[in-house]
Length: 250
Image (cartoon, rainbow, N blue to C red; front, side, top):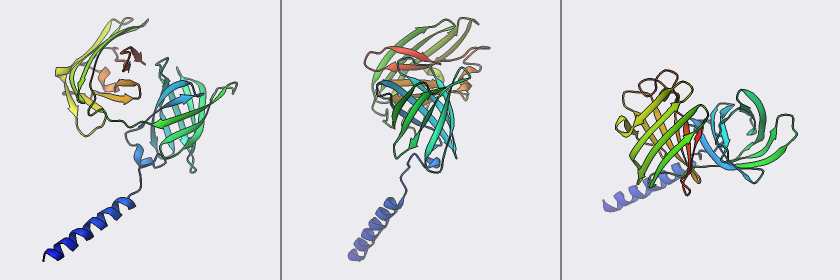
């Protein structure tokens, strides 16, 4: 009887191993792997640090990227061809300013970036970034002021858990304020990034590891009551881990 049990366990292990090997890897060219979007970190022209987030639905790609030195979102929209090549057009304040032409591989996207008109063309290489924040520790106090808004953020992470959080953005032009404190939040389960949701609301906050940076982003639902008054809005944050310097992303 013991021999039969041992033989059965060996057979089950072999079957499980074969099934695991047969399971296709979640590569970039599989559209089913893009349901929550993918984050990339890399360079344009071998020297300009950039970050990109893309969502894929069938042949369609959309998202944004930003230069780490400028921290301003640039919108992206394009398509993927059957051979995994793609064209992404970029838009700044609604106007087309350039494009990315390249190809998806197992864990990265590569190709050429060019300004509209083609007067400048530079190579780019961006690698998918998947590092978890489950054991991360850090404490940050951020302030930023711009012509039409100013913001504050206090964030404390202990072993991947949020133990301190307070954020405020004030639209100086409209004199409207948005506020969220840790007592209003609960953590979303089953995510490598830190996902938070305001109780009794569809407002979600995401904190993810972006190489040398942390990125704190809010969905559009956060700009509604009770977090914000009429015409108020939150701006995302980019925090440099070592220098602890902060910039708002918008």
